[in-house]
Amino acid sequence: MIESLVVLARLVQYAGTAMLFGAPLFYLYGLPADGPGAARTSAGTKGLVVVAGLLTAIGCGLALLAQTAMMTGALADALDPQALVMVATGTQFGVSVITRATASLAALAVAATLRPSTNLWRASAGLGAVALASFAWSGHGADGEGAAGLFKLSADILHLLAAGVWLGALAALLLLVLGVRQAEAAAVRALHGALEGFSGVGSVVVATLVLTGLINSWFLVGPDHLLAAATTAWGAVLLAKLCVFALMLSLAALNRFVLTPRLQRALASLDPASALAALRRSLLVESAAGLSVLILVSWLGTLAPPASL
Image 1 (cartoon, one colour):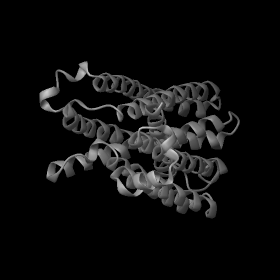
Image 2 (tube, helix red, strand yellow):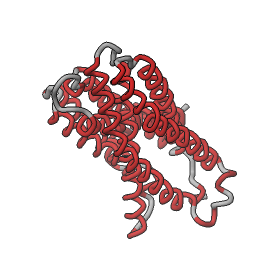
Image 3 (cartoon, one colour):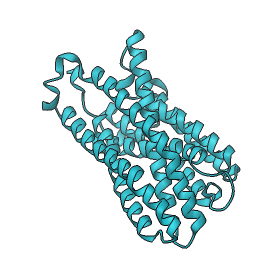
């Protein structure tokens, strides 16, 4: 029961922080600032920031309860104020969670005071980056010491931010494509421009994820455990994550090289219905795969990596 709560808390936090960072960042580089079809100024985009902030704050609360229950050995003791304060202020994990909670509450305050605009997206993305990077101090990434530990921590932070760019943009794109109607030519053009805007960024994101993933795996598996890693629960979950990641790569390539050009041709013929339907299906499957990756990563964080065995 306690372990399930830990996984749930991680999942909610990962989803919230990824959207809090990646979605407003996407609005900055992927959408037009003004003009017809400028989805950046819509209430839906601001709503995504609010949902992300709420998810992160709720996940932080669950994380503190779960960690307190793990340390005390009983779920009922998780509500003990003294134990909660001890975990929140006396552990590295607690400080990390409090940092995320503070950033998420600040993002909610910013969203409550600013209209959908560049200022809101910049502030939200900055706070989201802080919240997302703070995970590096609550997991295996902060275990090392010296220059090697700093290198490992830096790779972990870059991995987290790159994942946030992809997943946050995916959430924003899904919101856009589900809200676009066939007759709204300006909105369809804005969607096509958003897809084009993400295509270049996506290549950098994938390269960063692969490189930092290899670095993190080297530290977590260790050269002496490479062959035995697949026989551990940690290795099996990692393999499942890599398979789903490969599916996401395939879908992203389909979107970039097939469906986005198809949408452009459909715009020229003024009949984008089938192209929009195909794009919706692809983004829905990619989003489901992204959620699956987050579930597996949340589970992975509760298992001991081979290097620690």
